[in-house]
Length: 67
Image 1 (spheres, helix red, strand yellow):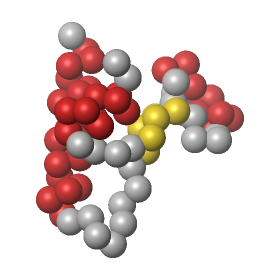
Image 2: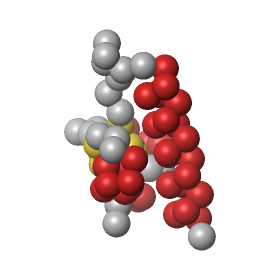
Image 3: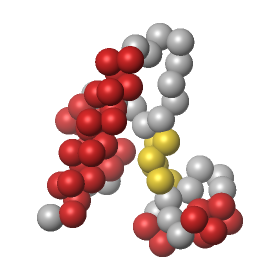
């Protein structure tokens, strides 16, 4: 299961993964070979708690992917 689907299913967090129409930028960053990055959009209705939850969720998913 990819990161986007894990965040949606387990944490109810909507995000997008991939190259985000910037493959050359990802090549420069070295993230193209791992299929890009995770992108979140923060809006006026998001709270500080929403942001902290997203940060914690990404940390947990990243740790689980290392195993």
